[in-house]
Image (cartoon, rainbow, N blue to C red; front, side):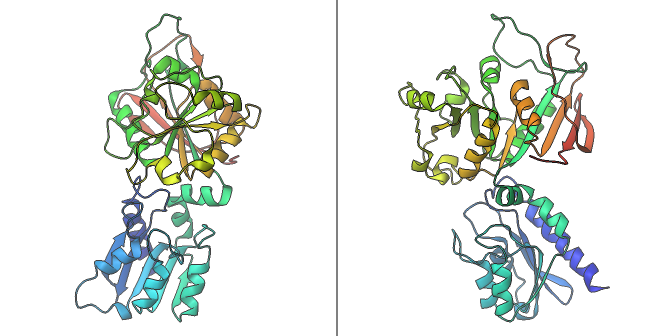
Length: 382
């Protein structure tokens, strides 16, 4: 079998392994690694959780007893790290274990690595080949690549619309608070699974007022996202679920309102994001009390860009925007989205708030319970 075919087979296995860390490793990338000797896998592993061992040491740890690691080839979908973070550098481990050959899917865009791992391995006398299934390797970690190359999170738009194209009914002032469900429980369970896979979830003021969402994970097992709420004039107060202090929450408001928020009862608020520990704010390691943090932005035509910059500065690599229509349309208008997930349910509203209109590359569709799901990628992201 030609070498490039073998390389692709083993790299595909790295990607399968890496995917098992989805929803657990952010803000680190998903990485799988395996050791191959004489065409046989003798050890494999993946990065399982943020703060824990990377894929390469896990592959070494799982090596078959009695096999020859010093005659093997290491396959890994992302360039081995070369710096000290929460764990020792993987490039150094490879050298220490006398692994003679390394095959890498793609270079790491993180400036702390960015070719330095490859350079270190080659200067240490190790044969390095790079670029095996590179497009697939980059796609797997598109959130990580977008964060480091575009300096913003990967943006997912999500909404449900009626069969006749409405995202919500026009509600009377005395209408009950809560969502007008368009999709079935099966679709809602899928949405909660999605939430475990992303770092943040964003909604506008009107969605909180009308639906009083929790923005958490109740129908799936996994990590709650950081809640992000737009509340320009501080219309919202502590009785809303988003301020129940069960998970970290970021509120975007104006400077004067951020000052005023410090005195609101029932909320732990901080104005200056420079005072925050990123890990505590996002609670990656499930330690520390959740916080509600107010961040200042100027509500002009660049407001959405300011929000994404603030999330970038908080080390948030992906965000789901769940509404409402005004917020979704603002991000669509500016082209500030990467992926849209749209449910169309069977109900007819006949009147109401029109669903956003979006165009792009349709990559998937199918039925989820009683609703049709369409997935669209932005071909010209902002």
